[in-house]
Image (tube, rainbow, N blue to C red):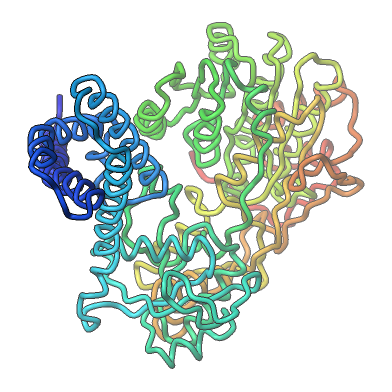
Length: 627
């Protein structure tokens, strides 16, 4: 059923097209008459005038029909492109050819000079092309007629296509009430006193403070995704020094996706930590995923759900989403069913550590590829409940890996963490055990078992960013465990894309390590988030240091002791070389770990040390809480 607003917009478009059609009719007649007048130098005899009067209606009719056929009237708006002018020329030439043919078929006794047809053709292109160009010119200039007193004086960063795109967006959309004063070039863009769209390039990023004060700038505009996090931090820092706000306009790709509107937004922490986009082997990924059946455990989590979104673009035949959180899985289903119209989707409530349930689902769906993203992640809670960590992380991985091996699944991709590197927490040690088990099983299996290890993902549920955001909204204080605490961060989409890429690269037994960039001091992250909220540290909101929690590290590490990292064909993916015991030895050790999980937390820790010698458990452990 058509929504009333859609019907209204459709009628509005048809009214415009009809108006342009009616406007074109007298113009066609005038152009035809002018062509005769020019050809005969203003001396039209009586017979020529009579012939012109008799044929004028036919000429107008043929041109209207031809222009309608070429959909010229549907494109009469301010978005004139070179393609529109080509289409206009094609329609005009086609109508002229029809006129020539009609003249020789229906009035063979009347000689019409060929120059009349040529003049009429050129005249039509010039008049209608000029009219279209004038409409665009008026539309783009109209914002400049708004009194500058009611508009925000702004600079655009980027003397390139992205900057020019912002300028066009501002000129075409009156709700963006900006007066663009000038452009700011970046280091890779020469200034050379250039002008873009009539607007001057005033200087470089290093000169923002001087330029902002000289030209009384109120805002600086950048395009989403155009700059690295380092560049955005510099722009924000220099804008802050000048007392100027930095705003982000959506990119063309974001507008096409329909997920964002045109309204400028403030700079986010994601902008400040952004890295260069991931380059994927799209052809190879299509070959790996196309027409396959995919399983994703932990599908409703932050990483799992993004992996699901990314996988859909490679056109699998069917996807099975497994999670034990019914609410989260419900919302994921609502989202994905809207965008995955050509893929069979199955949403299953299940616990990944339930061997009977997992085997039944595997038999029912026969997956080709399994992505195992289900796992607990909160370090302090796992310190308090180590037995639950073992069940959720180790037992679930062992169960799924064994089933994948027994039922000859093609590929198995396990998500791990940098906390598994020389772990100091139960959660990290359990993840390392899971890595060791998957690696040991890969040696004697037809299934390609792959592990992908990376650091924290930014703004995931329960992570530091949403916690800081809530503390800032509540007026503080913002709590940081230690002034020297550092972590590696990745964007959720970036991590998910690299997980999929690494999975496709694996041949079995690899532990892939993602390039996580440079570590970020948590206190610096807190300060940036406070500044982005328009407040000052110490004046508006305080930062308090609460002390390190059980199992936490000051610095996350990239290399397990004795492990070498080697490059792969992808610049952001490395492979870790390490030795491990035989599968039988690892399985036996894990069985002892499972038995220990039913006893005391200390027995779990002792058994984890047996399997992971580099596990450094805290001296004083948190007492287990009552269930």
